[in-house]
Length: 73
Image 1: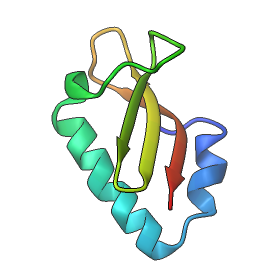
Image 2: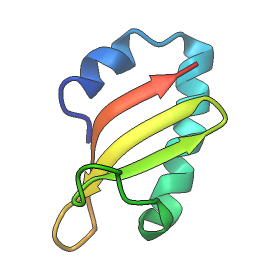
Image 3: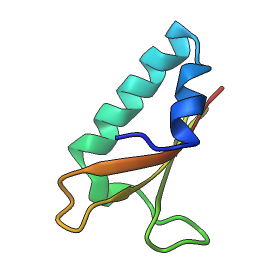
Image 4: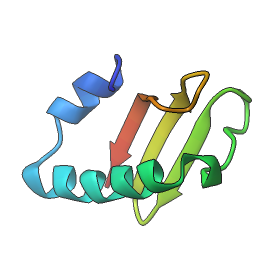
């Protein structure tokens, strides 16, 4: 699930960037607990790999991931 500003950032991506982001989201979904904690907000997780950054948090049971920020170089 994407929230603002992630929805706006997502709409601005090219098809190639979206494809790269999809791969990253699949990696995150496979093991969200392995994504490191955000530096300034302990409830958030911060995934960074090969020019892709995704900031997210999980619901209480961890079954839904809420994406709050995306960046794809």
